[in-house]
Length: 244
Image 1 (tube, rainbow, N blue to C red):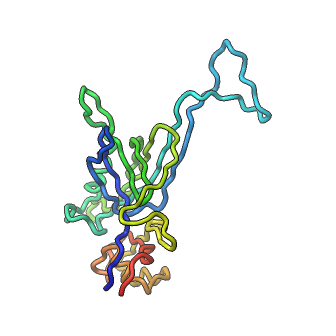
Image 2: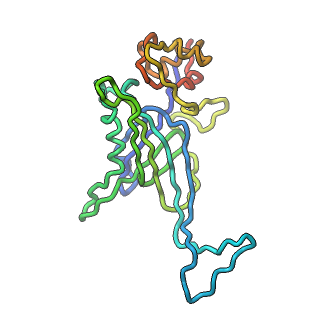
Image 3: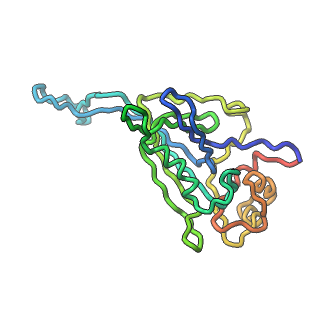
């Protein structure tokens, strides 16, 4: 078997007030999309001593710029105890154990002098980097065991930073951004396995039957003959893994 390239995994990082990395939280599944939005702070004129603001040809009143703009990132992350887990998470059977670290990033922390602030957070995925404060977080428990234990969850989080800033690419570890012919993991939705389904059958039903071994390796699947019900599979990684 030839050397297999490692899939670049996204991660969240907790930063100090000086921007130094304090904690790393690897993302279990790469997100499908990232949404970046830009906004200015504008309000209608409120000074009653001035005449009404002129309108343009479309009848829109002139607005006043009142402060710095903001740049926001919205991203959805998935966690699943049926997938391959880090060594320190072996034996975890409740997905909330995995999502707890992310929830900590929105919790205000003691910064000294009786100041409690949420930590600075960095989202990093390949050549994409976003630093900000987590202003919103929504956890959705998606799949339960027969005993009522949550096994899979999605987290929709929003990060915000002051200022409108073009997010210039950063160099990906061990590689170069945008190599011709490269395939970016996570650009297609994950596929959930049905009860009693094999990886070979799942891959064949979606036209990837010839690559089932590569898919198994990339997803860390030890038993491709029997997948766990609801297990999330990334079929797109087959293009990044080859066998010699």
